[in-house]
Image (cartoon, rainbow, N blue to C red):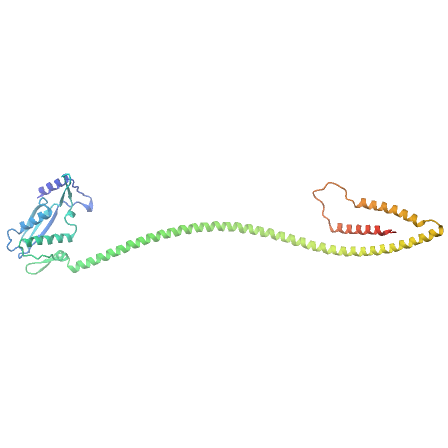
Length: 354
């Protein structure tokens, strides 16, 4: 049997089959199958039942793939062990054969295997075997079997145990999915937290920059405030000084007005005195037959012209070049000018004979 297996595998490799030997996905190069029939099922077929099963398997898997079998009659029910190589042959359009070593080309899971069992039962029914058409539930098949006396033989898990395990398996799958979802949510949350931290860092840096700018602005404000305070104190001092000067000026003007009134009174008295003097000259001129008044008036006019010329020269400002820094007029200058004006008016009216 070993030689037959090696020859079949060599044939598969020569026609493109690849064999993997890397861990869990190792290629299955030979697969055992167990087919069991009770004594009631094989009644009337005691000499052919094994060959009938082999023929059905050869039609299903290919005659070249079924390489050996053995019949067991020393156990509760008679059954047959079959060994086949899962070599799947596919003819290409160019006529060449492409081989693949894979049991999934024949059945992928226990349910498909149960379907094959149903097909075998159908073929046996066609050969007049007394056998049930429907398979027993796969859970019951895996759990055990009843012998010809109706006794249950446990050889695996009971249906209830299998259901409990399936339930636990489903619960674990659900928990695993929840964990995966939780992990995805945690990843999203972690990314969101990272973004928040980056934004918080940027905000913190921006805040620190603004705080430094605010501190500089505050320092400038304090300096400006101190400067304004100093200027305010200076303005207040100047205002106080100005008020003091205004008070002194008012007092001096009061004195000036008093002196001016006194001068006006004196001028008025002098004017009256001049009139009396002129009347005296007229009287004396008539007595002496000399024009004394005319002579005095002539002399006075000459004196008045000379006096006015002197005053004009005294009040005219020299045409000197303008200096960049001219002294501002003080209150003393104003008072002195006012006094000069009063004196000029007095001089003009001193000998007003006409």
